Length: 277
Image 1 (cartoon, one colour):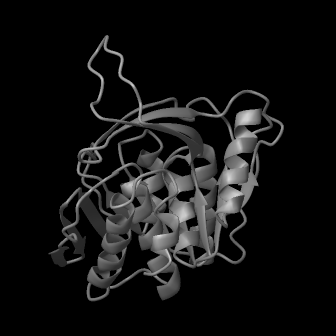
Image 2 (cartoon, rainbow, N blue to C red):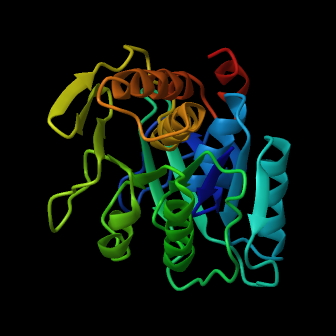
């Protein structure tokens, strides 16, 4: 079981021939609405890869929140809404994807100022995945995971103030290429993804890189989230923090999952092909 804790948004995804310049209007080629956000996308990936997954997040009772909840449930994600009484709209992301190369732009309102109000169930967890959103919930989950000996994976897309405290409970910090930290990251395992370029890693005195499959990208939306979901599932199947000898194989698995995602257009078109991995 992977327990994911973090952001769930409602994504409005439109495919376009060209990304609009400031002040410009363009006609979209298609429109989709689906659940999104780092933790939510990762949870969908875990389920698509055949893993059990529970997502703890904040959605509420607004009609848009129900749309996201129904989407996640249909994908096989067990959902725990820590604020089911919240009546205001959930976070919404507007995503535009360029058809020629899958590049995208995202305008999003994240979970800043939104509190979570309940504990995280780690009773059957084999790995915990955090995205740094909903800070109180993330810290609560990380502390509980440390007490239980559950490996903690952090999706470090960008620096957030909570990371100053959260990193001390993290076993594997998987950073994006854009991630910068005020101080060196000293978690037992440090990984850095870099789009189509090799993924680098370091464990103690060991380090290396793992190439990314060469594929034609049609849609890069959520590819990093899928990577983190697949990696967290690999850690859960291992049942512990990987050694230097084991890290490359886990990264290779996550790289293949992300490669499947980028080859398929749309918010959920990649789910069925993912099951073949």
